[in-house]
Length: 198
Image (cartoon, rainbow, N blue to C red; front, top):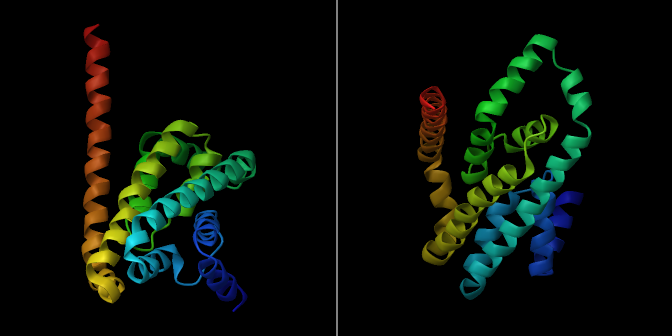
């Protein structure tokens, strides 16, 4: 109830409230309904300001994810100590290879996916900051601007549209994950061949 009241207050105070809402939501504080629903609501209520709300949501979400990333980076030693030595090393190797794919896909899709776990993993495993930042930014831009566009086009039916197409988003997320992993593997093979030829 308290979080719902805080969320409603932040939405009511306008753009600065939306910015704080986006930061809190991405930094790991669970909020009722989530940022996506509030962005669509504001876009329906004020179509002229929809893309401004999307830009604010992108900025706040990037800030929140960056904050969570750096918290995890500073507390990463504890995170790694809790995993079994063999499993921890395997997870580290796997994450260094495919980790930013696991950050990009849930950051892009407007359905509940375990993004925060992968953001924490990226920080704890000391992923380079600039690639992490770019991945979050490139995922959030189409997500939030797409939702603003949806709010303008479909109005009150936007949220229902997203709910009706959840399985389409799930299938798209799986397909995108597989495609990006294959691209990572193809890039690795291409780089190995170049090194062998040089």
